Length: 284
Image (cartoon, rainbow, N blue to C red; front, side, top):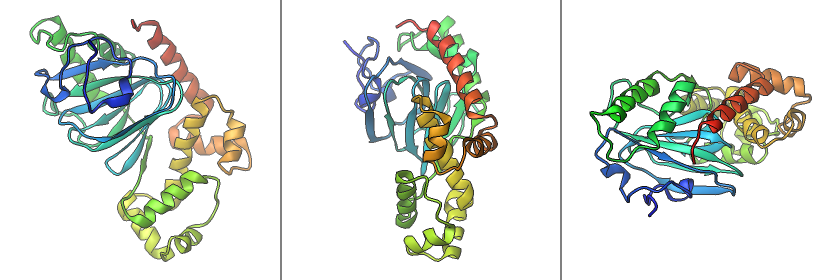
């Protein structure tokens, strides 16, 4: 009998055997779900649940839209979403992830907004261990003590800057969709304003108010997210740079380092090494 929660739908197509529980009805502070590889593209429709959720990616790239933002979850990162947040998710190609459901008041200091968290080796191992627990584990036994440490690690996990703000404003949604479809478009702020029926001043003000950043900053963040999706699939830095409209790979690398803190090759190498270490300890 497979664990069943209608709200999870496609994301955990090969979940390990567990009793049938409604996620929100599990009477424990945390409940971890072990996922396995999904080899085809998938998408999960918008949904919400009372418990907060941590989605940890072991392999592949998961993209979620939640809280008026696009969130990228590359390998060895996790997306935190507070309870009752409407969200969807999608993945392309081989993806593997784990989900941790948490009572929002289980511990003080849990993030109150969506964010992408860096996963330390300790947090990773605790999460993998917790995914093997019976849903009704002994809260006063060894498993309960381990969950306490796990929650502490979630609270202290560093935040990664892998967030792209989006807006419900129809004109800004049009801007977002058009740049997603053609990220190499080098049109200026004024040109984009004319395309979507706004003045340059109004567009700049609306971007600052609703997205909290300038157009240039927002477009660079979009490029980082699209680049990570492509690079994770194996595309070369040169190919990605040209497709995003950069005249050279060096220009793209400079932008990426400024946004993420390290060049793409190093970033991906570190994620790959961490993923291999995680994979060696996973019992499927």
